[in-house]
Image 1 (cartoon, rainbow, N blue to C red):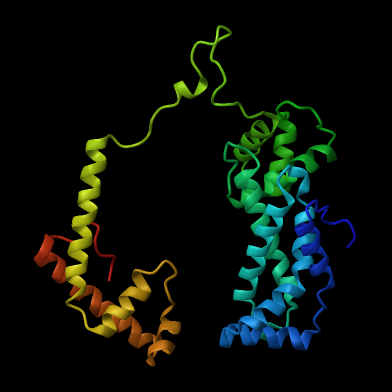
Image 2 (tube, rainbow, N blue to C red; image 1 turned 120 degrees about the vertical axis):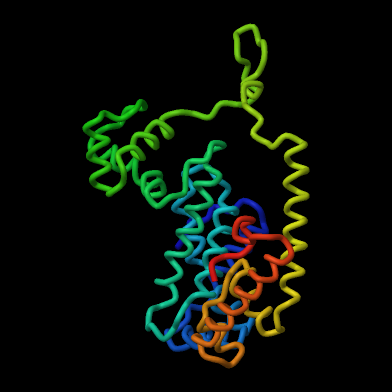
Length: 295
């Protein structure tokens, strides 16, 4: 894969050189490394697995160079996708890791491009992503190469071809045909005022911000007090199921504590009812206060 990454610094060139020299993995060894990482958190296995496919990250990142973003950043984001693929890969499905990882790498790089291609956020829904990365190609296909907004007929054709709402095509067409303006741009020829002077301040008034902060602290205190009424096992289940950024499934939590997933569900339900009663004694109706999810 020559010239996929035109590195300029010695460190970048060495990185690419090392990635290109990493040995390819045969299917059996690849599956073995994936199992060692998933089942035993073997970091050496993870390093060997991801190093072997760093060339895939570089190749994928090279396809997005024309968006004007630093190649090193594209590679870095692609590597995030590679790590996500390694965490979720299931070797028993008999799919090569490179095939599985390609989707995660491409998705991670596309998300980065959408976040950083323009000062104004372009959008991250599946329809908006499809439009962003395909609209120019489709306009060229139907010879709609003007810099202005597309015709109504062509917008309808693109919407049908990609299976996206017509309004999204209209918005993206206008967005891509426009250009960013500096917030420091003058409002008049005489230089009176700047564009940023016309932007409304959407932050909360100081008084309301203080009140919300105090309300949040008070609610946290109520919840902490209610949590003390639970048993250690109930506390563990509620924490992992309801208070974690990545909640565990009933099945996974059951395997962790040595009970069936149905038993975990029963304990969770009982714990939520116990929390609700405790919060009623402390703060009144917890549902009105938005403190307890449905049991």
